[in-house]
Image (tube, rainbow, N blue to C red):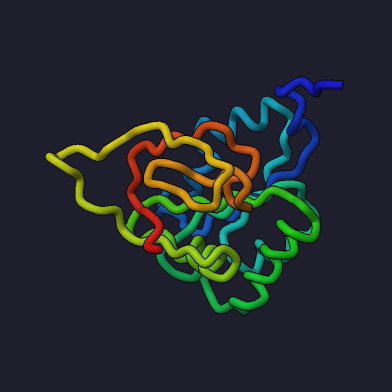
Length: 173
């Protein structure tokens, strides 16, 4: 049976590690995304530190990390990476890693470097004042050409269309 897309996340727990915070407070809860998720029946658990993220991670269905430019406090980086690895690969839960732009990819790089051997850096300068934007094509072949992505890779598994969009940070390697 096919599940109604509007009910896929119903009664799910979403942990949002908003590792940065503005003087005005959480920007995530004030945004449209949080309101839409709540309308779908998602319980949002918001934390602002790596320690709190680690404590809540075992009890949720999906986790998002909104990366910052630095650690929010003292925490065990190895434990943080291992908990994220276990969540994704052992428990088979969804981990979304958000990295906005330079220098807001500290947390993203902790995980991406260790688990996927990818590191984010600042985007290249735009060509003629504009960033390029095009649809990337899915490929089954591990020998990729520019403009393709590997459909079976752990990061892009089950994605059929990927729009490059305007990137403020890009993979270094």
